[in-house]
Amino acid sequence: DGGITQSPKYLFRKEGQNVTLSCEQNLNHDAMYWYRQDPGQGLRLIYYSQIVNDFQKGDIAEGYSVSREKKESFPLTVTSAQKNPTAFYLCASSINPGPHGYTFGSGTRLTVV
Amino acid sequence: GQQLNQSPQSMFIQEGEDVSMNCTSSSIFNTWLWYKQDPGEGPVLLIALYKAGELTSNGRLTAQFGITRKDSFLNISASIPSDVGIYFCAGSISNFGNEKLTFGTGTRLTIIP
Image (cartoon, rainbow over all chains, first blue to last red; front, side, top):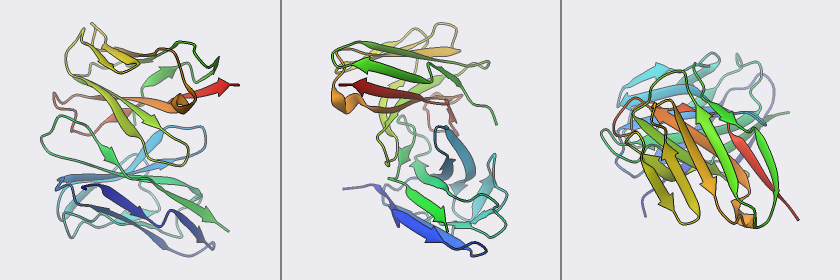
C-alpha cells in the first residue's frame, strides 16, 4: 500500500542538539510539506518542496532546515537555533496536479528535555 | 501566514447529537477540503469540494462550499464516539486542491458520556 511514513513517532532531544525527522513517501507525489502543530493550535507551515532539489520557506522556517535530494524523501532538521522546538511535527505530500489535497503522515512528537 | 477562521473552537456534545461547524476566509478559494485529526495522528481527508454551492456527503458527514467562495460548512449527523477529534478546514486557490493549502484553526469535538 502506498503511503507517507514519518519516523520516529516520539523523539527526545537535549537542548543544544540538532535532530532530524524523517519523512518518506511512496505515492510518487511531487510536492512535500512540513507542518508544526502546538497544543490547541492549528497547522503552521515550516518548509515545502514542489520538486526535487528545490524547497521554499513557509511561515515559521527559522531554526529549521530541509533537503530534497530524492522525490521520496523530505527530512526536516530541527536545529539548536529553534528556541521552542517541543511540538508535534507533521509531514504531508501532494501530487501536482491532483484532486485530493494533501496526504499526511502520522506525525513525530518532539520533546526537548 | 493567513489562517482560516473556524468556529466553534471546541464543542462538547452528547452521543447522537448533530454537529455543525464552519470556516470563513477573507479570500476566495476554488477548493475547500475538510480533514479530521485523531489524537496523536495526522489529519485524514474527509471531504473535498470543488464548486461554489456544492453539497457533498460522506456517510454521516455533509459539507458545503459556500456560494461566496469564502466559506464552507461541515455537518455531522448522529455523532458517535469515534467522531472525537479535531476537524480542520483547508482552502486552496487551485481547482484541484493540490497547491499550497491554507488551514483553519481547527474545531475540537468532544463527546460527553
